[in-house]
Length: 432
Image 1 (cartoon, helix red, strand yellow):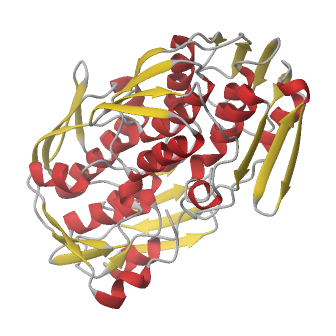
Image 2 (cartoon, rainbow, N blue to C red):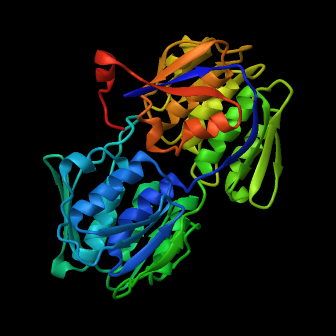
C-alpha cells in the first residue's frame, strides 16, 4: 500500500489535461457485453476500476486487444459465462451493470452484490423493478443477484422510476437494448455519462432516444454489430482540479472538457470568488482574492453533483463566513469531515446538513481517505495546508483519478508517493 506525502501551501499554475470519464467508462465497458462484434473504445481512463472491469471481461471470455494506453478493442462474441467471480464483482460498485448487460444479451445473469465506496446503502430495488417489468425473474440470496428471462429474451415495458436513479437508468437501458419491443423509462436520470452510454450503444447499432431527458425510449434491436466510440471527458475530475485551484490559489488551464457539463460546478465556484473563464474545450480557473461563503445542495444533474460534495466542502472550509452543505443523494457522505477536523476545519454535521465555519488555513496532520471523492477532498486540503500532510488509503483515490500525483506535480504541487512499510500496510480494511 502507498500513501501521498504533500507539502502544502503552494498555489497551482499550469495546465492539466482531463482524462476520460470514470462514470462513463464503468458503464460502457460492461455494455460492451451486449455487442456481438468488435467495438473500439477510446479515451479510457487508466484507473483501478477500469482495470478491474477488464479483468472481469477477460474472465467472462471477452477478447481484449490494447491499441495504446487509452484505447482498446473488445470482442465479446465468445462470452462463456454469465456469472462473474464473486471476488472481483464485489470489489466495485458498478458491477451491477453486468446484470443489465448479461441479462439483456444472454437472458440470464448471476452477479455479486456491488461493493465500492462505503458512504451509504446501495438499494437496487429500482433496478429489479425494471428487470421484472421486462419479464425477468429476479432473486437476491447469498450475496448474489440472480436474474433470468423467459425464453432468454426480455420484453419491452413502460417503467416509471420511483426515484431518480443513475444506476437503475443505466441498467434498465442496457437490458432493454436487445429486448423484444419498446421500453420507456420515465423519471430517468440525466447525467452526462447516461447520454454517453446511450451514444455508445447507438454507435454499435442500438436505437435509444431521449437520453439526457427524463423520458428515455429504447427500441429493441436484434443485435449490436460493433463500431468505434470515444468516451467523454470526466466532469468530476475536472471539477476536482478546479476545487484544488480554488483552495490553493493560482491559475490553471483545465483542458479536454465539455464546458456545458461544468456549469453547475463553475457557477458555485464563481459565487465563492473564483474566476472561471470558458474556452471552446477548456476552462481557465484562477483565484487571487479570499474565498467567500456559499450554500450548496447536491442534486441530480443538472444540479450540483454529489460526487463533488466533499471537494466543495473542503474549499468552503477556507471561505470567509458560514456555509451550509446539504447532501440530498447519499445518506452517509460526510464521514471525511472528521479527517478535515484533524486539520483544523470547523464543521458540524447534523444528518444530511453540514454547517461550515470558515478558517484561515488548514494545518498538516496524518489523514486517511474513506472513499474515492473524500480522498480527493483530503488531497485538496493537504495542498492548501501549512506543513507536510500524509494521506493514507490512497487506493480509494486511484479508483477514479488517472495519474493524480503526476498531474498535480505538473502544476507545481509538492506531492509524492511513498510505500507504507510493514504492518501499516495492513490498515486496508475495505476494497474501494
